Image 1 (cartoon, rainbow, N blue to C red):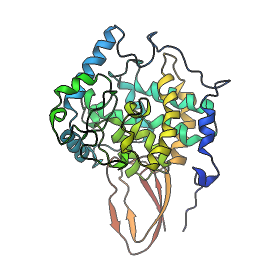
Image 2 (cartoon, rainbow, N blue to C red):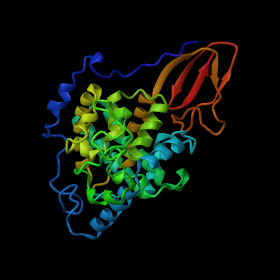
Image 3 (cartoon, rainbow, N blue to C red):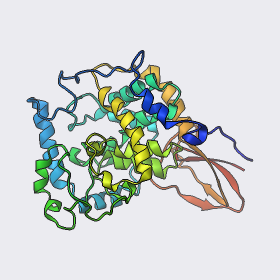
Image 4 (cartoon, one colour):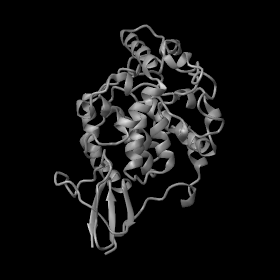
Length: 349
């Protein structure tokens, strides 16, 4: 039996012009309006204003900049790249963020699920037909579940905050750059030059970034065979890389694909940053829409010869889910069409 599903169309292959997005970014009439101040009455990403929260933010970055070394990132990618911590649905993951507040964020002190929905709904206003971008807004920060005890309860400095390359010089455009002077890599000649262990135009995919929620969620999406386009994965992985998309640093490491995807990230950033507010989203009202996107866009039809995935008994077959560990396969005597729905493989002979 062959299971047929409709796949969403992405990119130029589907007749979509990326330039349309660039032009539309400035469209505010009837859509998302960028506020002039954050929820505390200050300008966005102001790391110098005097406040109790700002002092906490600066302390966060000091710890982050001292500890995010090349060797530390390698260890974390090896440990968490196995995706063997927990298995849960995307929406369950969103709800888990009700218990998480980002201590590095100078603009918001609300639970992270509020930020996810604010971002997604702001994008939805301006781009009602681009559902893949809505879903990207919803899931882009899900990696912050690393803060939760269920995922090991990593410290804030190892999960949130601006990201940056390790293995080469720390650019001065990075927030609170002065604290890198206490980082061992800052004084290591192998890592403190313009290119470090990399080469010009090597591509960001070959660059190790400081460890955190961006890289973790990217690994989860990639290893679970998401049908989101490469631009969405780029957004997920580099949306906290402000030294690149706000300051233009590290472009010497980019390749042609990075240049194209950066255009999408620059558009996304407006919604990620400026949608933060004290205005709450009606979760129950928008939940059905996002559940439908999860089911649609986290689905991939693949043909595998002689392989059959045995779903875990604890997993509901009717709930789109994603695995945080690699799938387990069992060899069978016949061929199967396998519907991969967010990591759960529904099989029909």
